[in-house]
Image (cartoon, rainbow, N blue to C red; front, side):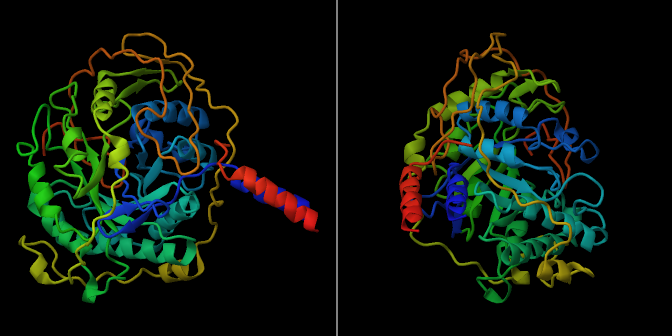
Length: 487
């Protein structure tokens, strides 16, 4: 029995895993190396809103063959994190998460979806805040909290999208942040950051930032204060500049942030195809002291024309010109230097919440948060009923991509596969190479857009508004043998 238990313990550690990250002031930090982590992210929602289909038991992390194809392409690109908007907590995600983990990629996950009852609404928000809604958000936490590459949860996405939505929405978004953090505190083995993904509506942006990152009564452990603040921004279009795009104003406004700030979406598609010249500023001296990187919108081509890869539901895919342009911009960066930066010496403490922080007429300046709806306290204290099966990393035996993938010029990319990385190794350009062409073709004409609160951002505006075995396994084998011999 002892031998069996020891071997089971060995098997549990044989799967290489990313190091869970922590928030320290303005930075995401790897506690093992002490280095800051810059997000080089991708919005990942194959099929758009249709990629999340509870009736067909499908979401972006439910099909291992699709995940293998996409992880290989994202690994070649240099991505180290994916944002996934719409997830079904009742599905098994072990294989897909294990694939992205082995490819060196963290996950930033939205707890909401576009389905009725699964997101806060901008209109009459108080009608959408009830126990069954919170049960669904807690279920997402349950499904993903045990994966080491779960980086953060978003409590809301663009719920505040214009001045008219600022009268009541802020306190409810902050309440959901509070509820998620309390649930994680009670039911997760580690602290997982929770924060809000905001629309770049400058009229209300700074009040939103102040509202979600201030501390009630100056308490640094305030559970309703966001652990991060993220921004969906499309103000850099084409061959713009740090000042012309107003990115300089963003840096100035967030300079004294007490929490990590990053782009949860970026990549204006007017003009199209895109050239991604903002990459140099986001990851250069202009911004990296204030911004913790960003997430490109988006991986798959949808009617809104933001995609890097065009694919069919059957699996074959074709790279678009935007893929090569982004790859070439990433290739100009020194990621080894970027990811070895140390945290800043001092971080501003969160300010105390006060009506004085709010400058826009009509923006909610009352920091009294909604009380928990009936039944919610019991869920936080006792855990939800019918919990999803705990997620865990599993061994992947075959890393080859099954689907055909073509360059933009029509040539087939041969021998495409995920390259499993070692323990704690994060993906970067050069981790994986493939037979990609230099890049050609056009991403097509621009489309139209709008905004969704709970979902995947299908409608973005066109304007500017068994993994690899870790190095310590051999030592563990020897240790197990010695343990067995001792008995």
